[in-house]
Image (cartoon, rainbow, N blue to C red; front, side):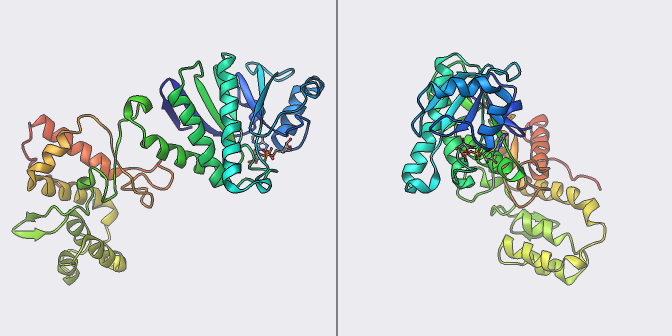
Length: 346
Ligand code: APR
């Protein structure tokens, strides 16, 4: 399970039944009468036993966007509280109002938890079931609200857990949370990873598309992408065609179009070819070496969603081989005080 951190709070995302979240409080996706129902409510009322309904009928309901606290009755330890949060029925409001009310429901829940010294809270995806809130919109609202709360308020909450039903919400939450946290400073997320990919972002220089040319055996290569792609076709006219492609993406495109003709052992040699491409590129461009060394021990990750081999892939669990080779090169330069590495064997 991927784990994220914000200040002192750990954020987790998991699939399962909210009733079994194992947190001190669980959040109910409640209705404004605080009555028994289907979905999350049904599961919670069933597990908590009949005393819960007897208790909630005395509370006189709860307006949309707010939350109420009750004991957990027969729910197993360590769960001691239920926070009943009333999200909006999506179709009853215009989108702006619905978003505000959903955000209020999350914030009210966290305020109640903080006020009562609760250390861990589990949320379902409020309003995304019977209440019809589109999941992608609700995901952003839920995560932004929780992050804003945790970022701004000193409090006792040590863990916030999102318990979801199904694979789709799970990967949506993971992606969105990683993206939101990446925008926050490392001091509060504990993550000082350098994600490089976009042309307009810092460290684009580490991508193979960045325009840093170099010579290999007296032949000029416009980018490491050109070099890498051409090595798929040794001793063929295509090698030169790829080398002379006008842009790195044209070089890649040409190579991919001809993938049936690439050397049969490509998968075995491609890591070594990339290692050599990077060596050549950095060797001929001293400012790049200085940039690489300036990153210290920070993890380097190629933020490519469509490449789980070289980059981190669609679920951010990919191999990140480009990042790994760059870190290897960085180690080398550090050990040799910036001396370029000798040609590697193989
Ligand atoms: N654990 C975790 N998530 C669950 C569970 C469970 N046991 N059961 C359902 N879910 C998921 C659903 O897949 C959905 O994505 O929780 C999300 C919220 O679904 P609902 O429970 O339908 O909540 P909501 O859309 O807020 O509708 C609230 O439903 O039962 C009633 O009393 C409730 O009237 C209120 C309405």
